[in-house]
Length: 183
Image 1 (spheres, one colour):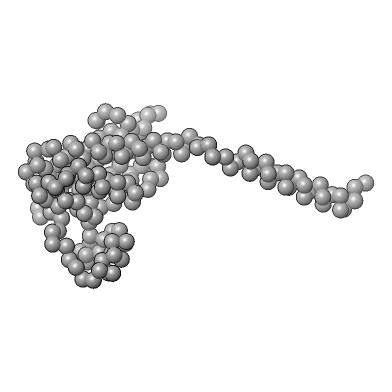
Image 2 (cartoon, rainbow, N blue to C red):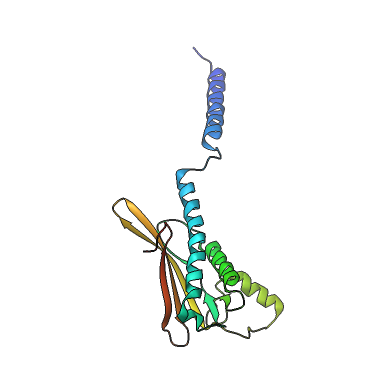
């Protein structure tokens, strides 16, 4: 018969060995297929956003509005994927500013009280004192990522809409496949 002390030692060593086995095998740094797919989608969004913004800025309707200020809100995620929309929006805003050069300006949009959707901007403004931007957005850039599934195939689409704030009329719209061709 095995004594209680020996049984405790065996149980303790089995637990320690089990945790070590889980730690060695379960916590490896190899990305999972889901992580790879999410990374590919994020990279695809960045590449597609650059193409979409170029197409938008080359549009004759948008070119007529040269000098306008784009108000950009946080990108809408209408997919089943968990995406960092704040990071994607920041990337989109930076890309728009780079591509537009000095033809257009782009800012994060603010609500009616002048508060930014990005709380860090509001905090920075509070530290600076009551300064008001001299140019308010005249165009609204609405961006969303849409998922379309047919059978076993899933397409991700980047949708851009440019709305004239004064009239509410759509100036330009485009859909761009993140997987490849334009739908």
